[in-house]
Image (cartoon, rainbow, N blue to C red; front, side):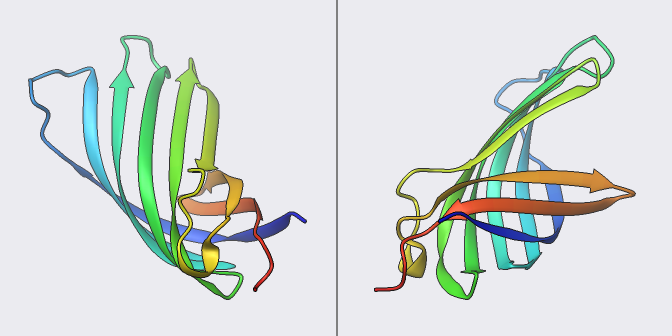
Length: 132
């Protein structure tokens, strides 16, 4: 059975150095705080690629989320793959298979995010085995 978790989150991105000077690539550390059905913090890393075309870019990221989901404690990893083609976004955020720990072992699913008026919201569709 699929469950839907919703809420808000705050995110801080901190630029990190690259091995070589390159104004088309970026590297950032991620620090998030989720509120709502997912009460958790996360840390991760993001790599970005920009282009000379306005509104076109891409990013990949991995983050480790630790807290409670639907009242169950544990952690899991999220994998991001996003691009924007001349302003048209495409984003995939999925749970890394078999990354759940604690009461979140067996977690699978995907997340969407929305940013409106500076506020970040998430919707997380997931499946999880029942409590033993």
